[in-house]
Each structure stands twice: as structure tokens, then as C-alpha cells.
Length: 192
Image 1: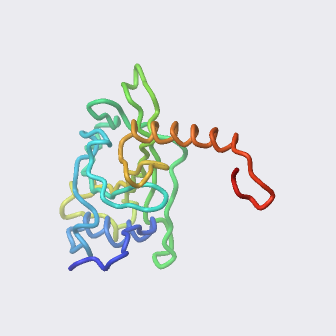
Image 2: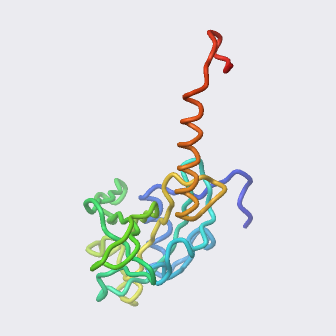
């Protein structure tokens, strides 16, 4: 089914868990399979992912990932996802409690032993509350390892999608701001 013009896929945390991740885990039909791609994002650097969605506050895309729960590290070929902040609970009034959890990460170049620069890439990782029988697949327990991830480049100009380009863009904007500060303005607000 084609997406209507002007439509941007940006579900709430609760909707992402209930309408997309829960059906994926339970082996049921997902409303729009193209909206959330299945990709092992932990084996690919974020600048190599296909980020399709555009908005005024940056770029993002959603992915299903089957986590290997024995691996605590979220390493990629050239960096790692570092957890930041606290784990958030996601509540659903219609279920009377917690339906899932959200963890936040930033992408750091280098290794955990020798970390490099923190990039503008960020990720929110969502998992279902497996203590709720309704949200757990007892017939195929491996499906319980699926998480949904929202990967995004914070404050990135719409026309570009790399960390280097974002840094260059910021530097150019700062130079433009410096140039504008030296420009005289008459009483009507027009530059001289």
C-alpha cells in the first residue's frame, strides 16, 4: 500500500512497541513491513545504514534487530554504541502497566578500551516487557530476542547524512554567524 504524500513514519514509543515490535515477536502481521526494516545494525557503522526518513529535526530510521543476548557489547566495525542515561519504562494504560523498556545510546568511534570521538549518531533501543505473557512468544522463544531501534543523526541538515558533513556544516554556519555580527543594520532592520 503506497504511503500518502507528506506522511512521515514517526510512531510514539508505545505505538512502536504495541503495533510493530509485539507482532514481530509474536509472529503476527505487522501493519507496514516497509516502515521497520530487519537489519543487524550492530554489525554496521551507523553512517553505512540506509536512513530514509527526513524531518526538520534530523534523519532517522527504524530497524528490527534480533539481539544475541549473550553479547552485552554493541560493537560495530569502527566503533560502538555506548549506553547513556537510565532505562525508561513505557506504560500502556490499556494494558494496565509496563509494556516495554527504552535504552538510549550514542555512537563512539574507536573501541571501549580506546574510545575516540562521540559522534552525532544516537539510538533508542526498545524491548518488550517479557514478564507479561501477552508480550512473550512461548512457542518460539528465539523471537523474544527481537528489539526495535530508532537510529538517528542529531541536528543533521536534511541534505546531508554523515558525521563529517555535519561538522563541516556547523563550522560553515558559525563562520556565517561571525560574518553577520559584523554587518551594520539601520533603524528599520535592513543591513547596510
